[in-house]
Each structure stands twice: as C-alpha cells, then as structure tokens.
Length: 218
Image 1 (cartoon, rainbow, N blue to C red):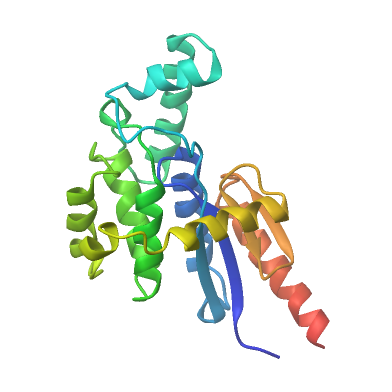
Image 2 (tube, rainbow, N blue to C red):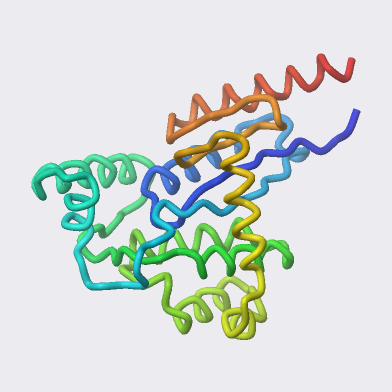
C-alpha cells in the first residue's frame, strides 16, 4: 500500500471561508494519527476572475453590490466570519481588506509549490489580505511576501506569463470535477468536503478516507 495520502484543496486567497477552512483542516491534521503520510496539494480557484486589481471599494460595499443586499447585511455577514476567525485564534481586520483580482497571487502560490513552500505561501497571502490590509494583487507586495516566505524568483515570474497555464489548469480541473464553490477539499480522491465545516468535520473526513484507502488496499 502506498504511504502517500493526498489531500487536494481548492481555495482563493480572498475567500474568508477558505482561510477558516485552512485553519480548521490544519487543526484536524495536527491530530491525525497518520499525518506523516499526508501530502497537501493546493489548487487555484478565483471567486471572481473578472475582479479589477483594486478600485478602493470597501469589502462591505463590494459584497453588498455583488449579492444585491443592503450594506448592513453585508457588514453582518463579515462580522460573523470575523467572529469565527477569532474562535480559531485569528484577529482579522476586514475593514481594511482590499478586494482585488487574485490571478497573480495564485501564480505565486504555484511558484512556491516548486520550492516546497506552497502551504506557507498560501497562509502568508491569507494573513496579508485578512489581517494586514495588504493589496495581494500588487506585484511589489507579492515579491515582498514571497521573500518573507522564502520563495524565490517571484519578480521574474510576475514579469512574464509563467504559471498562467498552471492556474487555468487548476480552474478547469475544478470545473470538470464539479467544484463551484470553495474551499473544496478532496481526501485521497475518496471523500469530498465543501466549505469551512469545522475541525471535527475535517478530522472525520481524514479518518474516513484513510479507512477507505486501507480497505481498498487490503
């Protein structure tokens, strides 16, 4: 039986449920008895491929426009995810978040994957957007964040179209599988979890997929 156990995760760096799900998954993974066999592969998913780089619209207003709801309702939605983040030990600053296009951020994550820094790069981008109010489409910002994370060659990457195909491949694969929202997690090709369902749900998915894997290989 192969010792490798894949977890494939589709997410976007400006998706609050993706950051919540990221933390929930890692909490579950830290408690998983077979975690040394787990290989996590992150895949690109753009919530809004047509999003502008940045237009200064506050997050509450952007959500209100996107979903055709009052600004107050959008603010209440953001408060709920803010409170959920706090329960996981994170302090978000959604009032300073800068909605933006994430295509280049995903290219940077793909670059990080080749340097075995994909997970760290994704987490750094999440924190930059949700906690620090940084513009995660700005090339200088992306270069700085990559440097902090130990990822090299990002300035050269952003000056080219490298990894554009990698991002598009992830997105096309999501469409073929039927993924329409994120986070979407597939545990060893056997168990699918959609959304930030909580650490216990992630732990159950890990255990179920591991057991199914063992039964198939028996």
